Each structure stands twice: as C-alpha cells, then as structure tokens.
Amino acid sequence: MVVPLRKSTAPTAKRAAVEAALLEATETLLAEGASFADLGVERIAKQAGITRTAFYFYFADKTELLMALTADVNQLLLEQALIWWSGDGEPAIRLERALKGVAELFGEHAVLLKALGEVAAYDEQVAEHWQRLIGEFVEATEQRITDEQADGRATCASPAATAFALTWMAEGVFNQRILQQGGRADDELITALVEIWVRAIYGSS
Image (cartoon, rainbow, N blue to C red; front, side, top):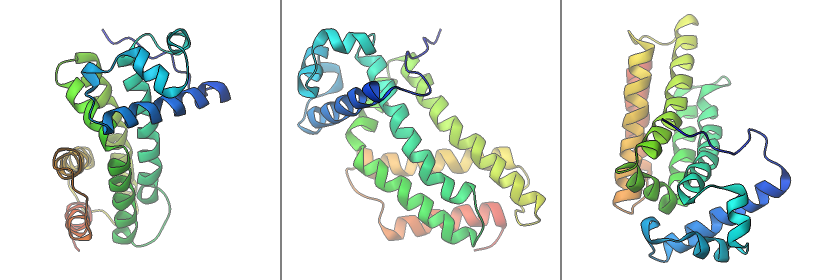
C-alpha cells in the first residue's frame, strides 16, 4: 500500500521555504559524504535551520521527505522536457535542448537522486514513487509522439512502446553516467541520445 504524501499540489509560501531549506540541507549533508540511511531527522532539521518538531509538522519521516524533495526536482525535470513536448520547430534542436536541460538537473541534484535510487532498492514505497515520476515522462512523451503522428511527422509503429523505451533508456544513461560514475552528459553523449530519439520517432536523423 502506498501512503500518499502530505504535500499539497499548491504548497504555501512557508512550506515552500521549508522544503527549499530541507532540500539544500539534505543535499549538503549527502555531498559531504553522509549516506541517506545514516542521516537522522534531527541532523537534517538542524542543517536546515528548523527544529525537529517543525520537521515532523511537515513530514512523517525522512523517507516522506525524500519522496517530496525528489517530486520537487522532478517538476524541474518536467519543465525541461516541455521544450520538446510543446511548441514547434526542428525536433532535433528541441530534443537537444530538452535533454541537455534534464542532464544538467541530474548533475545539480545528483546526490539526492542517487539517494533515491539507493533507498528504492530496499523500500517498495520509494521504488513505486520513482516509477510514478518516470511514468509522467513516459505518458507525456507518448502523447507528443501521438500528436506528431497525427501531423504526419512521426513514423514509429507504437507511440506507447517507443515512449516507454526511450524514456527509460535516457533515465538509465543519465543514471549511469552522472549518478553512478560521477561524470557528466557531454555533447557527444547528448548527440547520441538525440540521434536515437529522432530515428526511433521520426525515422530519420
């Protein structure tokens, strides 16, 4: 059973400020070498400049915090993906901008996203949370491909299967290069991803 987050779809200014402080605090502690499993609520709260009691006013535990913070980061990733999902123009150019933006955010929030992956390996609720976040990209990509088909541009046989494969491929590439290897998505890697996406969707480079 998945326990819904307490977070509302339209957080108050105070809550947004607290979450921003907790995001910065958590990423700072992780960047300093602490593992998420070893981080205590009191340590996170102190780093964020709030009390332990205040922490529990917003979150039931640090796992709920992790899911809320990664949901916030996911919204930033979605905004970058919108460069290709919406608007007109050359697909390859928009895909390149979108993938670069996503890659940069992966790098900026690498320690948090890596912690999410580590916790997801043993926590079913967190694993389902990450599946849902990636699912938002899959659904939006499928819709974009369907729209491109309707306009006579996309040539792939199955928008659903293509969206699923391409989205999880990109997630895996960024995960390995940025989160696991501690590298960055350089121009060569982005170009390769763009070529794969364009050929898979449009049948040409």
